[in-house]
Image (tube, rainbow, N blue to C red; front, side):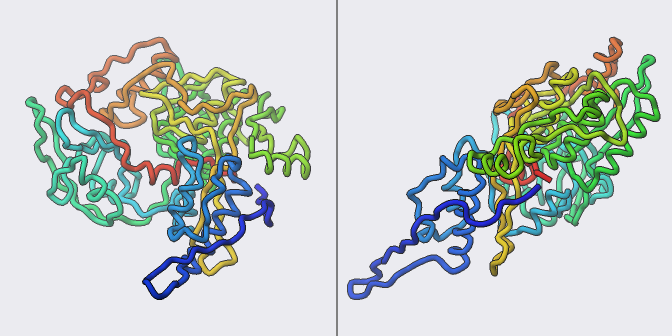
Amino acid sequence: MQYLTGKMKVLMAVTFVALTLNSCKDEEVKPSSEVLTINNFIWETLNEVYLWDDQIPQNINRNQEFNSEAYFEKLLFKPTDRWSFITNDYEGLVNRLKGIEESFGHNFNLFKLPGVNDVIGVVKYVIPGSPADDAGIKRGDIFYKVNGMAINTTNYRELLYDVKSYTLSFGAFDQAGQLTTTDEVLLTSTIISEDPVHIHKTIDFEGAKIGYLSYNQFIADYNDALVRVMQEFKTDGISELVLDLRYNPGGSITTAILLSSMIAPANVSQNNEVFSRLIWNEFVSRYWLDAEGEDSDNLISRFVTPEVSLDLQRVYILVTSNTASASELVINCLDPYMEVVVIGSENTTGKYVGSITYQAKNTDWDNWAVQPIVLKTANANGISDYSDGFAPEFTVEDDFDAELGSLNENMLATAVELITGVTINEPARVSPSYFPKNTTTIHPDQEVRKQVMHLDLR
């Protein structure tokens, strides 16, 4: 992906405001050199590449803005843009996009219990080799205290986020619906490189060979591992694939294209059919059109001819509201060419747009970066703007009762039943008798999620 350089927009004139500090003396007050530099960087970047550049307010004087993060937020086209963000930790951002970050290793959902302000956490999955894994934490484990303090709607952010160590109290519901402590676990965060290929296996069931892949982020650095998984499936002779994207927030568009090319009918990849159309703002679209023509790779992305082709006519994709961006891109862009069966607990996120990381280079403050939305995508049939996400064709609860990849697990079992026509009757597929109903899902990590919930143009 090429990057635009140089000033391509006329910048606003610099103005300053003199503030009266006392009755006898006027003194000019302005932001620091760092803030002014970053404000200029923000203005120039957004006015050049931001998808909604025509919606940027023109009446905000960047030389009177003393907080660069707040200034950036003022320029965004809300509520349409839920994803653009700014950071003063460029290296940390780059690492997160590569699946490298400081973490305890347990990915969880938070739920508010009905009728009270109490909050519980339920573990969705654990990263192999992480502190949580070493501590024996499993999918479905419930925690409700941090450092001996009950979690509630007021303190959950303070207790669970931006901390490097804590003790979690795990518990279970009794017949009266009360939580009792079963274990206490001390966790200390560490730097983790998460392999996005979480689980892969071939399932032999009722004469069918079914590939199952739990894939948690599109990361180009792990493309070789993805190819190896597909080669295993091909060697095993699978005829159906269940692609589990329920916790996948997005990632590299090149990886999304590679995965889709290995799944799609062979003629689609061999003919390099249109995967998606990239729709930038008017200024950038004209730039690519004039520079590279209407077939530019920056305007049209195409299926590639992969090393391994499963040559499938149908794929089953498992989703939740955490399924976003590049995951949704795969659903949307495979749909014109094959049957895509969506199974899930709720609509996907609805992120039909992509972003690029821009660093404040050639300054004394190159730790700053912005991740603005720069384009939206459309499939070969022109389908875009799916802001409400993709609704499951088959609605199935993600109930955490069985390990991912197990036929006792609701979503996978549903897919296997659809493939084979044989009902799987296992008691583990029934929700726990004493788990409270009518809980409310809490999304405390929206600010964190949008930093990984991306369509990275690399």
